[in-house]
Image 1 (cartoon, rainbow, N blue to C red):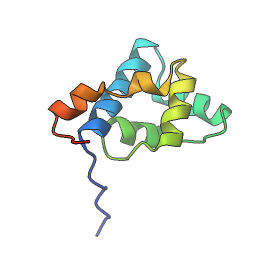
Image 2: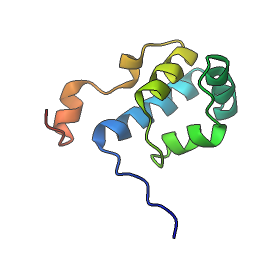
Image 3: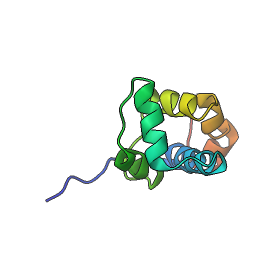
Length: 92
């Protein structure tokens, strides 16, 4: 039986959408993004990028920082505002 992916909460879901949106706004394909992050020392396959965007794989902090750098932005720009996380049911 295939392993079930770890549950991804509302902050992770919004972050995945933000990654995809910014990638598309920049005109970068998933393969191109995979190549860019590999050049920055964090090899991620285009399949891993796809799984992050489809909310099938968690995006850890190292992935987030490298994806942000590859897209020419800060990691904070890919995270939802804290009020969005609270509205989606996240406490803390």
